[in-house]
Length: 597
Image (tube, rainbow, N blue to C red; front, top):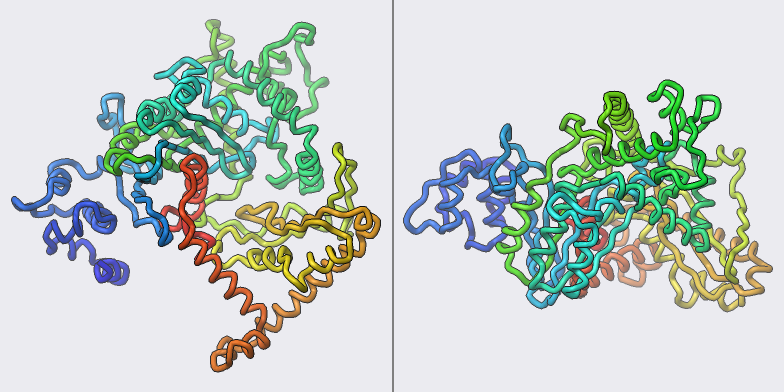
């Protein structure tokens, strides 16, 4: 099989090779991932079958292969990983009877799936990761991505009851969650394995045909507002929002990602609220300007709520597309059984953004209301599409590679760096945090410079920065790593808990850290200027003296590889969403190994 893959890679002669090989050799046994991958590439040749041909290949020749999923290259996994993986891409959408919809042109719908069998698991878990998040929020409606996450759970056409999903999970030993980050919106659940198929059916319909009712929109904005209220008394969240306020206002990092009732005025007019019409002179926000242009200078709170729903629907159409989604399912079922569950369900997800805007605002029967809704749909689609360009592409395989675009620059603070920000905490704490804007390492997970910076600054052994400052009685803890890791920037963070003396002498703590940073820089320059083969003929001790930074890098890389090979996979509930996000960034082949090899 190594010869087959290498030949295909060098000379692109896989079709000629497949034509001459017998079916048994093609499959390399029925359940082999490489054979499964190779046979699915043969979509134009008529494979000659014999009586001894296996049933899977006979079926492939008797049906249109384009109706079956494309099997991808196997997932690279560690030596201690006992799970079986099958990555694939789904065909174009099917109708309710499992048939291809009229007008299908044979193209893949592009939804990426990873099927995982864990024979030891008592639970079945699934996750969907949408490669869009708060960075794609329209600035006129901050928090719409988070709001969309909430709304997806409020029923579907197949399961219209709002609480049916969570009720089914709770009755069968399951749980669920969802989260919205800058780059991803991820949904997850687990349930006792025997009840996985029904749970997956309910779950998949959230993405096939969600309801997004007007009444649900009005009520769920209060849940978003409640979540934001909790963040207001969280010191970490408060510091995070202050950091966003210092960033470039035109950068996607500066967007308010949570949302609340003010940024998402989707609720019906409460008693005591002013429902009188607004005019151009009264409105000064982006949202007011849009509504004024739609409604010829006059609008009220009901128009605001209706427009929020229009933007919500447009956001879902624009970003919840098969090509922008990754699905991971894990369970004790066989891979074939998992495939039979996933393909007919998630294969029905259409690309709504390519469809014509349709539908009416609920309760709108008058011609004026219908015309207004059409205007809102058009304005919402334009708003969402423009905002989508703010967010850099998530996948490292994207055609357009994002360049270094830092959200923090000296010019934003009058050209003077560093700047000091002092925050009065709600809880008693002494924390010192240093932030360093750095170029992105998103696209080089196995060669990231911030990996060794995190190791060096976070090291706690003798002679380390932590040991020096702890012995001096200035700090009690220290951590270092990327606070922001985005396709277009990194924000490296060093965070310390200070003692009372450390708070008094915080400048000394900063001086030590900067001195250590200069030491690392000097060693890096020496390492870069040294001949690549300089240490080849030296002993290990001489090698360490000649280039300690390179030696440390090799040690970190060796430890990461050992950890990758010797660590058993985690619980399916947390494993599925993490893998879905990783696959959307690094692809299915490297979704497990990225950052470890």
